[in-house]
Image 1 (tube, one colour):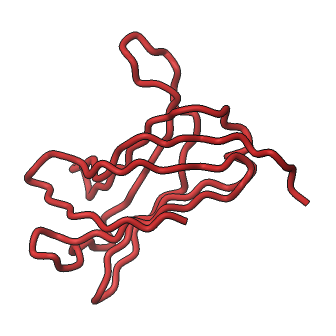
Image 2 (cartoon, one colour):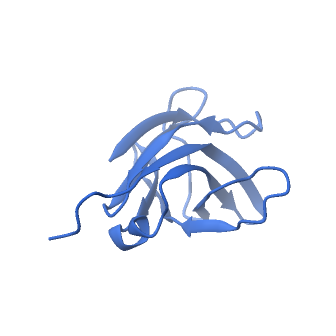
Length: 130
């Protein structure tokens, strides 16, 4: 499980870059602790939601769509704001080994921000589940 600390500044228009690793056939989870530019938990409300996908390529002319859709969610408390993405072992098992790209979007109403993006290296599983 990866845990990353990120600063979210909607006015910057630039997502945080974070590279991740998935082991094929294993459960995957990444949690992003989100703070604002004052280093306080970002004030997400219940109106906010998150979504995230992984794709094999975004090269010019690529016609491959999303390879998988992560389960994504936002949790907040007085001391933390977290965005979490996850993919179950059945889904990671179907991913071919190689480099992928991903992004995490958050939004409220019609306003959507790309909060995180980067590369994901997928390594094929060697053993099958017991």
